[in-house]
Amino acid sequence: MERLNHWIGESIKRGAIAVITHRNGDMDTVGSACALANIIGPNARACGIHLSTIARAMVNKTGADFLILDSKNPTWPRNLGGVIIVDAAGPSQPGIQLPDVPKCIIDHHPAGATFEMAADDIEINWETCSTAEIIQLWAETHANSRIDNQSRMLLLAGIITDTGRFRHANASALSSAGKLAKDGGIDFSGFLEDMESVELNNSQRVAIAKALSRVQTLDAGKWFLSYTKAGTNEGIVARALISAGADVA
Image (cartoon, rainbow, N blue to C red; front, top):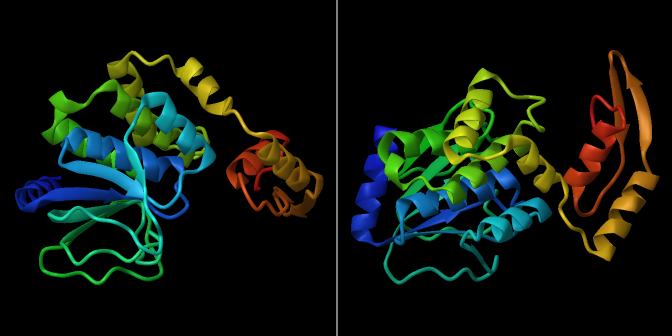
């Protein structure tokens, strides 16, 4: 955490910091980016090329600041001190050409290909259940007074989704989620219900229904596997299959 805090401090001296998500825009990458930028302050901004359905809903619910970038021609501040790439360990994952400034990689799983690292670059890759837990630890260690409820909700949502609603959580993830909820006075059951009740438009509902109509099953040893193809909202489809009894979706 000392390395990350030092890197942020040095980057702010040079200019603004862009906190970049991966191209799929899921809740962990978006929640981590928005919370980190919010806690760093006005010199940082979360951005990326896509927001998933649930991430968009949480950004709107919390009033978080998130800038959608043009994947072919991203626009950067004139004085850019550095970029932080969250939840994306490989160079292809942000989906954009990164500017030639110092970079910080924060992730919780390895990638097949790695970023080319320069002298001013750092990488933080821990075996946590979510990137949100790493951001939370940095914030509680170095910026505790700047953690507001917007950031807590975004980080909590990231932990919830990346652990499959805690099905794959370890003790550390459960402890992190519990602390976020307790410190923010967040009602766990109500928060989960809000996340599950994401409003979909008609075309999204049709796409999900079509994906579910194509479901096939496979008895794979001790696992009951359900599979289908979904062009959009694949997370919602996968959760529906798990809720219907699949061990693997």
